Length: 190
Image (cartoon, rainbow, N blue to C red; front, side):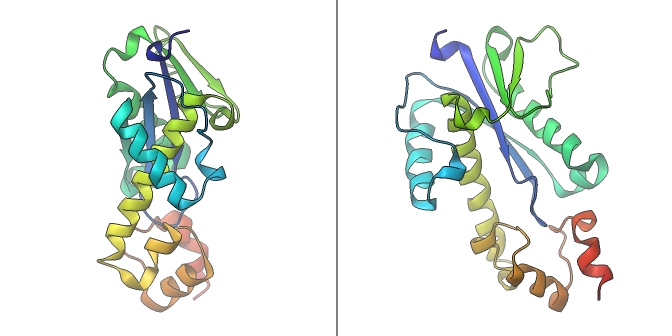
């Protein structure tokens, strides 16, 4: 299949205590042989590949906010972010859509040609590309929020439940960017 006829989709940010869940849909125009899943790359390499990808492919970013995570739960919010990313791709309905994971955000859209692939981010180039752009975007977003809330160390932990972040929640409480349902055990223990 031609690269320009495939959309790869992945998400980041399902597990953090703070920030949105972010999904990216990517259409590659050519193979990128050294590309890997973002989890296998250093931060420096993620930034490097994200720059190359953003300049050489079509991509779309979809987010689901903290409020949407609380309203729909993390799975529902992830599916929402993925649909937003997919629907942001030009002529998405004419392409094969390959989605990382075991849940299809397009299950109610049978007219779209989509498949889910468990561990797709490590075996499908366009999904790997989506994971890299998503990770780079979300890390940048959390770093920018860290300038407003430096005491939570989001530029280092991207909102994940590190010891530093949990101690900051205990000391300072929650912000509007925290996922209350994810932080209940921390808040209740105080």
